[in-house]
Amino acid sequence: MAFFGYHASHEQFKPSALLKYVQAAHQAGFSRISCSDHFHPWSDVYDGLRQRQGESGYAWSWLGAAMQATPLNFGVVCAPGQRYHPAIIAQAAATLSEMFPERFWLGLGSGQALNEQITGDFWPAKAVRNMRLKECAEIIRSLWTGETITHYGLVNVEKAKLYTRPAIAPLIIGAAITPATAEWLGSWADGLITISHPHESLQEVVTAFRRGGGEGKPMYLKVQMSYAGDETTALEGAYDQWRTNIFPSSILTDLRSPKQFEAIAQFVKPDDMYKYVRISATPQQHIDWLKQDIELGFNEIYLHNVNRQQENFIEVFGKEVIPAIQGIN
View 1 (cartoon, helix red, strand yellow):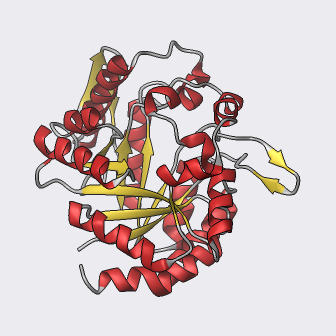
View 2: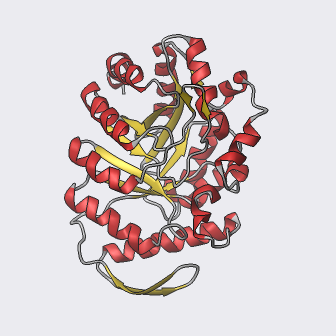
């Protein structure tokens, strides 16, 4: 059985607004919440009365408030190793898990220069970032067991011991976009989180994760979609908010400012968005897409409506989409 979650996008909305949206999602029938963890948004442009992103609240402060405000399970994807020391992430995740037992999962990824390079440190190549990520995961796990950790490597730890720990440690879910990263994660992560691709590409990511050692482990999917009352509005909303985010990860991970994201997106045409975002004003079309995701084996599916019409999306999907799928899976 698949569970459906609402994705809270800190880059697009103020934390106070997102708190209201997750409460509305809970009332509408969503059973999970995921959120982003960025220092910068992908766009800071204001177009007349419309705001194209231009936010970036601190995820960890917000998580404590949001988990208190609803009884749902939550998860966040972060990138330890540069902006965050792994011992601090271990402590933050342990604190949430102690307060809200078995309601939190920790997603780990290799990050983007947009957020991580604010420290002024050198931005490593992808292979080095992957090695650093695995080191961080091992440090976090060791701290959760109560060990005193001293470690020297791509990150350094000196006699760190975590005193407040949950009875049950959260899952470490590895974030991957490409099949190569998914296969690598399969050997050490507790599960996988990826983003929606065309069906064939998504199948490749799933197959690679299982081949790498992920067989039987949970798989989560963040669906990038745009729903509105009519197709034109859904397309316009996706283009307005998300055209900076459709490029390959090999490009997106090395850009350093919202203005650079805006610069590469200036050549994107509205119809280009259909390849990267599930755009439809028809609930049944979204149901059909989500059925395919369930068939691939995804246990939790987080819906990110990338346009700014959150209330209507939450209401319609709570009434029409989620009940229709939960009745068959």
